[in-house]
Image (cartoon, rainbow, N blue to C red):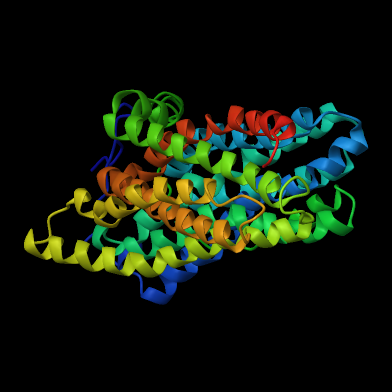
Length: 402
């Protein structure tokens, strides 16, 4: 019998119910080994953005540029985080997760060295963009890896750790790199970014034609973004949240720095622990969300209900603006700085909870193509953050503090 198939037809292979080669049938320890080692990489992606911020003043002095130009390093990195997943997420669905993780992250490491050794501003900005482009591999692919490994009703807890790294990394990165920026030259920040991690993730390989790779696979995130209302509107909402995040991060220097409470770079970094603490509470409160979700699934006889993911975020969308008002009205020098820091803890929890909902809802809705869907989600999410970073430098540089 001729087993050859026509090159124009796709052959879809389904796993048997108890097939040991199906990642969803793996033992729990093996699943953990497939995604948990990627969490430090995800943290590094956020470190790469916020960790640069404490060093912008020294960078501006070294290259004799304005603060607006110095912040371009952050803007270009964020822009690269928007475009990177649109390229590597479809590739991971075509070639498998493992090679895309290894190649993308491995290629990114030399560019951190390039940032530290760049002889001029142009070379530095190019290196910075390439860092973000290749480091962005975890933004969508880790969500896709989790979707590969777990049934829909099991993804909640792994996703909560993933989003903790994605959101908490910014505040933790600023805190850690503040130690470096306070006592060392600006380029030493990139020396501390440089690290090597070994990865072991679930492999999938779908050999198809080059036409399918270019036309179908690579265009999938853009198609989702332009034709799927879920992706489009959730990405707009996420972009708004990230824009607020950049403005809030910039306000820390104004409120707690020399123009405000008179703290130095290291002490301002300590204030970011408020956000980190609030975000770290998020995975704990997500336990309540998961219990609610499990109850809804049982009531529906195991049917997929993405809408059951939004219960806790209904509270977060209320506490989100409350935390911002709290922060804004308690930033005066006459008020102990611990009070606005507590406000940022509430903001961090709200930010985390809403972002987790958008990711889980998207993953439940798109399942096999979760990585491409999350890439589309992240594209518009990161684009608004680019001008926000420049606006932050302009407004904070001319702002006065009462």
